[in-house]
Amino acid sequence: MKLKRVLQYAHELMEDTLQEGDIAIDATCGNGHDTSHLCNLVGTKGHVYAFDIQSQAVENTKKRLKENQVEERATLIQQSHHKIEDHVPYSHLNKLQGAIFNLGYLPGGDKTVITQPDHTIESVTSILHYLQPGGLVVLVVYHGHPGGEEEKNALLELVKGLGQKDYSVLQYGFINQKNNPPFIVAIEKK
Image (cartoon, rainbow, N blue to C red; front, side, top):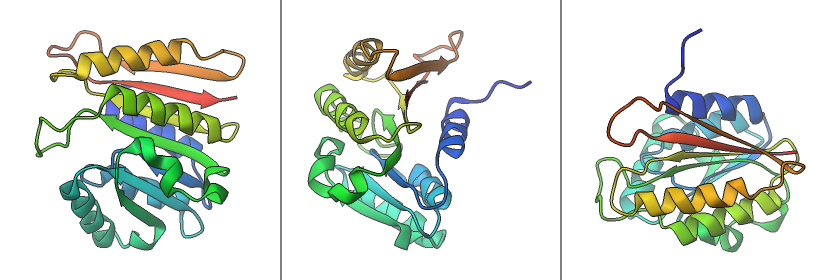
């Protein structure tokens, strides 16, 4: 067996969860890698809602989706992920099967624009409310930047408090790497 890198494992978790026709959220679309992957998983009958506060991220994602010919499977929203209920139709929220986050800043972008702990907690809480049984939320936690430690701590406090009767919560990451290596928090709704 070979240990999987964090992003590879995040994608595998989504592959094990999503199928044709599902509804998914990319809470931080960044450069569009996760959005494109989710679009492939939900197929032509499913839909992905992708959020980011930065116009550069939305444009990067739009370009990647077009290159991969899956742009019709996604709705791109330039807004914080804590505004999910304002932008995803209720009929789709009630069918939500999966969501993915990459917490931190846009790779190749402005490193001072970061995800915020209060927005992340509000977003995760909202998504868990709507998530279908068997659904999954995957958070890739980058915390080696100013503000990252606070967000990591707030998130870990939230997920440790989730009742084990209703949720299974996994933490996956390499603990012998330098410079605050990223890790995954995966939340499965029972």
